[in-house]
Image (tube, rainbow, N blue to C red):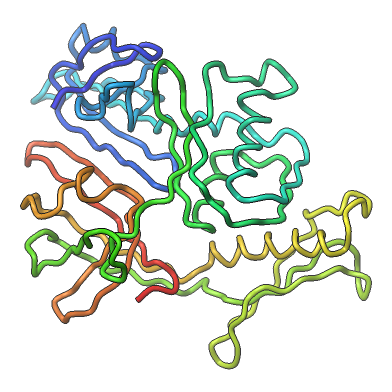
Length: 354
């Protein structure tokens, strides 16, 4: 596999003589990478901070996908291998993390429209021209219809996008297309056995397409109902509640929502309550029962990445006892080292699915 170096948005050269690669792609987060290369004169001059890297199979007709940016470089001497360079960095999505929500913003439309508004006002066409990132554009809408009432100020945009994605099951990406940075939202496709619209994708040791599988369940910080306290004090404090669980299944928490502002009661009482509820639901989503599966996929041609399934898709995990779990592929770690090539996906259980 070849690794291309991009200078700006154009291919500059090919990395020569690398030792290992870890390429971590995330549906909700930024993703990151680590690559160890030999410290040749060419690599020292070529692989500098700020350059972009792309794998050969991520070069497409109109640009590049799954691009990584070099942010760190360490040169060391190894007695057996000589000079080595360790490169580290984040995915191109992290461009959004160079901006914050600059002014108080109230969103009351669809989630997709709200995200596009935040990107436009803080990256594409901000009031302060020095904040603009050139050649950054929005892809076409994908039709996300969920609505919200939420308020923003000061959030790091990449971190906010990750939180929103986990709450609403929305992925996002930044790729290079036709000489532009293109921001797009991704819904993912349900390929589980619970649907019949497309051919299902099932990972199981039984089918020889999953090895070294592990399950991690952690409910220590879990809660499913909350009282959110907003502006005011004592009996005058404004509150809202979220969560529908009852009886012994109900686990409550108090959430401090004092940061949610009514702007001197410019907005209505109902609008303010919706803002509190949105804030509370975001905390509920973050505290949901963490059920994660990890496993090394086996390339047996039964299901091929980027042909039969993609990052962000919902698939079925089946164990040897015949128990099915419906999970989203939230992370793909691609690795090459002296032992060969591997792809390690992370599957996270989809809430409410079986």
